[in-house]
Image 1 (tube, rainbow, N blue to C red):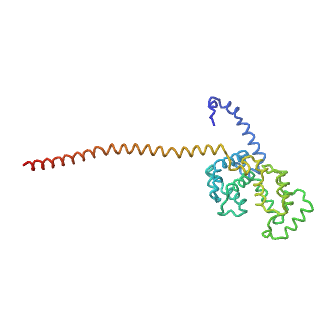
Image 2 (tube, helix red, strand yellow; image 1 turned 135 degrees about the horizontal axis):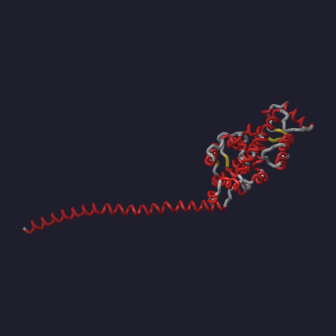
Image 3 (cartoon, rainbow, N blue to C red; image 1 turned 45 degrees about the vertical axis):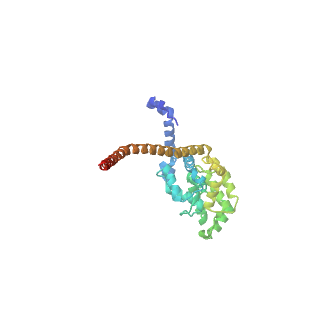
Length: 308
């Protein structure tokens, strides 16, 4: 990316006007004041992380480490966390753990995950973080038989289903009723101020089965091509490992690395051999000279004695 050097010739006021810094700053402060409660809950820094920034980070992670998936390597949660921290040193481990739970269905121990499974789950957890947290509260309320606040006008059917759920042990359930869960999430989306998946995709997922678990729902979102396209950070799964431009660049770099050391080593070794031969020559010549002189003296004596 070429640096714009013209900006150095601008005055302070001209720079602010050209870059619209004041506009964005004013909008940020206005949003901060309008949503004080959310800022207190999530933190000011996290509040200002825009969907575009999250999308860019996901895309960068894919571009940098796509080769892992291409090689078929399976990595543990801690290893994916290390990769993310190469891009962002203070990236929270908890975020990676939550993404791993989607893949491993709540068992985020040391199990290994493929790159494709992890990155699509990570995308849902990271891009829709606030939505995932709110849905988790709804799910736990439904699981324990409570009436979630997101159900604004519960139907008679949903009330009966919630009552029957309350009479069962939460640990013994494999999930919650999909239709009730869908109704609750729709109520959430109607007043939600953060990004959330399209309600069309949510309905499509929840209408496909009668019961659904929390992580089963998130995994279905991770695999949904429509949701992935709406985010726009990653290609479809069939194209996840394909990037011709990056492949060509990688092949060029590999070829460069493969050629350079060989040529350098051969040239340096040739120079080294020449220098060694140059340094060794005087000593060899001196020793050779002394030996010839000694042999020459000996042969002369023998000749003299024989003549006598």
